[in-house]
Amino acid sequence: MEFTSSDDFINNESFVNYCLEINQQDVDFWKDYAIKNPDKLTVMQEAEGLIKDLHLLLLAEQLKPGAVTALKNHLRKNRKKRTLSLWKYVAATAAVLFVFASITFLYYQVQNPPSRPELARFATHEYRYEAGATERKAINLWDGSFVILEKGAKLVIDSTFGQLDRKMYLSGTAYFKVAKDKLHPFKVYTGKYVTTAVGTAFKLEANNTLKKLKVELEEGKVTVEKKNGNSWSLIATLNPKERISLEDNQHLPTHQKFSDKDFSRWKIQEVIFQDAPMKEVLLQLEIYYNVKITTEDGAVAKETFNGKFRQDSLQSVMEMVCFSLNKQFKFIDSNHIIIY
Image 1: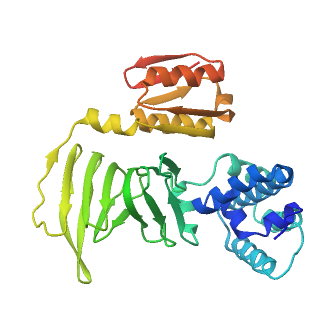
Image 2: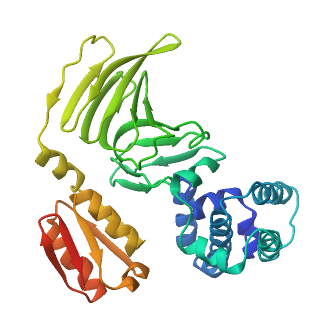
Image 3: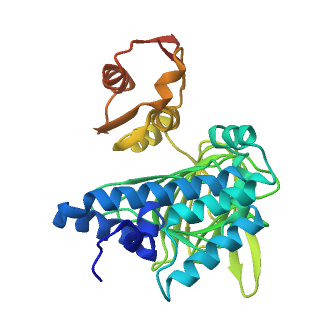
């Protein structure tokens, strides 16, 4: 297909997946396309902006059923023929949404989206993530949880995520910092095992082919269950700084303590930011280094940052971040940093 206008890109489902970072294969394809077709960058960026604007508009209105239906109908029609430009569609959708909320309310919702567990109820299809062979992948889930995928790891978010629970499937190694939501347990399926948490932080190493699983709990509490026929049986309940290793032919796994320093060293072995909003950067650094970071200047959150760190100390990372902001930082105590 020849892409000559922003509408051509907007009406391509793969391009929409790229813009919203839904499918890693689509993301890689369109990044490569942009490199090979620099003359298309202007219309690509225009289309990407329109798609993200609509996506934000829907989130700001908590994805009202009418808006979701309209969006699905819009995409369905575009598979058969070109329709009105997305600008016209956004205008029509906004007109409907205006009946439910004032412009002031809409602006507030965009700046302060509804609680993430609320938004998580509106997942309508699977989301697939995959880390490359040479780099990790960091993921901010829409319920407020954060995931680090180790090289080669794959994660599939179930289409029912946020309805009764928060279900996903992992192959490989990953770290999870789970947003608290008692009504929707966070469940990670790895072959015959499922690890369940509500609000906690843990690392999984899953080899589904060899039917092996290692669970290391940083904070909170998790349960590990194994499938037996059509039912699940409890294998273990972990407390902070405990680990278990499971194999299919193993019946009684033993709990072991693990080194907090080793765990922290694994988390920071590779930290990558690519045009990341500073608010997101600081939140991730808090997770990587187990600290609290606050800023005196609210405008800092609007900046973006690029950087790659490997086993770097928090001191050196903060120096680089603050250099890019033309700011300074200081430690209030060992676990609290302020940027000023």
